[in-house]
Amino acid sequence: MADPNLQSSTPSPDTAPLVAPSAGGGAEASAVRPFANGKSRGFWGEAWRRFRRQKLAMAALAFIAFLSLVALFAPAIAGTKPVICRYKGQYYFPCLGYFVRGWENPIFTKDRFRGVYTDALKKKDPESWAVWPLVYQDPYRRVRAGEWESRAGNLTGDQGEPNRFNLFGTNQFGVDVFAQMVHGTTIALLVGFVSMGIAATIGIVFGAAAGYLGGWIDVLLSRIIEVVQCVPTLILILAAMALLDQPSIWHMMTIIGLTSWTSIARLARAEFLKLKNAEFVLAAEALGAGRLRIMFRHILPNALAPVLVPITFGIASAILIETSLSFLGFGSPPPNPSWGAILDSGRNNLGMWWLVVFPGGAIFLAVLAYNLIGEGLQEATDPRLRGGR
Image 1: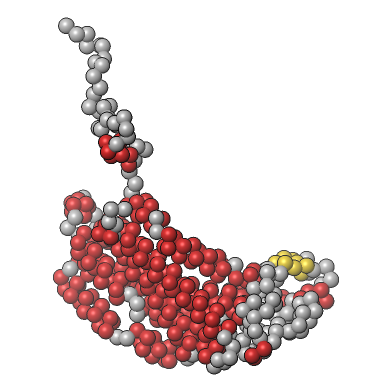
Image 2 (image 1 turned 45 degrees about the vertical axis):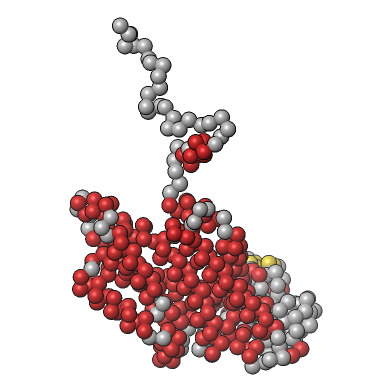
């Protein structure tokens, strides 16, 4: 009789390998490689792995990251206000006034700097010092002669061609185009992200309610979506901007967001209709979870991947709408720098080719990058487009 304390030499089912690897490392060995670490990738990990394989999409993502850094550090790249300065024993960051005018300390207005710091700092406080931007050019005004190290002032009109002091040339008033382009990046990215953030919020809420609740709520919300979708977006934006006394860039972003949510809502509705009868949803309902928790805690994470694709395409569309409005004179009010406004000034000065080439190229590359990212997301998250890769 066998001793029960002795362990059998035969491996138990729990410890035996599912597939024995062959000597040549063939099909059986490759079948178990995804589980070699003991844990399989999640959906987003697998989607990111597939997205990284697409060179164009990754290049577009790197370009958008570069634009984001330019927008974030725009006052340190081009400007005439110090990045940091010591004045009368205190440290200040005047360059933040490029983001919000109120962030520039009132002491410089009180001491009558008038936006020119180079001479005023030394005259009013000989012990002061400052760290200046990489390029001494202002996006709002012309740099005058002798303002910076005895440099000549910016040329105006047709004479303002690109040179070593004005990398992208100047406009008809002598304002540096490179500085306008750098600071206009902030507006371009803000318009895309803020407007589509508003659109995504409205679209996901409407689509989730219509798809999950169904009934008369689905009918009512679907009709609202169809009505908004029938109205031409650009005409509605022009009408809304015309009704405002003092339209700002924030008004424009809000209007673009309020008119760009319909495609997101329709796609979210379809995903919620498909998932509301899934087993994990029925289990959550059986456990007594509320409707809002089921919609936004359980269903939304599983429906979010397809919704990200139209959001990405929508960012590119929002940038085009903003530049179109600025080109028509209904965009960001002056003196805010905008790629579309620079392009509009080139239309009125056809001999100044740099006013068309540089902003036009930036708009083209930004829109192309967002479209490539959208296509990459679509291929990485849609099982039908993955193929055999």
